Length: 255
Image 1 (cartoon, helix red, strand yellow):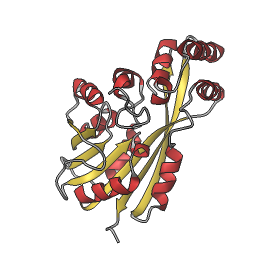
Image 2 (spheres, helix red, strand yellow; image 1 turned 135 degrees about the horizontal axis):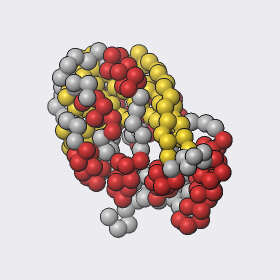
Image 3 (cartoon, rainbow, N blue to C red; image 1 turned 90 degrees about the vertical axis):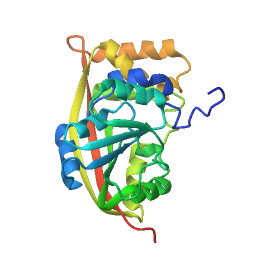
Image 4 (cartoon, one colour; image 1 turned 90 degrees about the horizontal axis):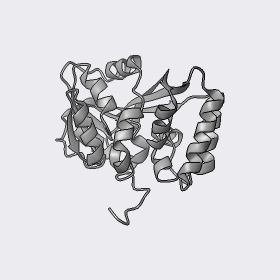
């Protein structure tokens, strides 16, 4: 939409859905199993994956025998999710207005998405749709550390005007832990990695909204990215590490 706010989270990913689908990481299987176990879900129970994007987390949940509805405000992202298949039902909706019925959901998940939500509105909506005893899981893939990752971060800081503008996952996670409606919060962290040649690294970088919307000089960014890759690559590839953080909790009644 011409003139749309470039920071509007409902629109930030519309131009990059294909790259997101191709280059974003999955999530460790053991961590997904932990989320399902902590939520005490039975086979076929309904899960709402809010901010589902291209359906990466939705498919992992569906693979575990759950009935999954993936919700996202971006039709471009949902088209990629539907094209990938995997058994989830995808619908256009927002975190504060899911369109789901009261008390019907056993688990609400938000993978790589909770930092885009208004916490009070989202928690109120999730409480409405959750059955008694239902849970919420907030999950993030967080970039890991190392010499390459330090240089990669420096390239982002140098070239993207929006890299420090956006709310970060750390602030959202801490806000959830402190929120008066968040009950019985439990944490888990797992490590994993992607292995990239330069083309895949380039796609991973440009799948980030703060690169697509925040980099004014694309040739200069790509040149610096190439230099960092060449400095660290071994056998034509680099490892791109992650730490996946998950917080599972319940929501208290509104006081």
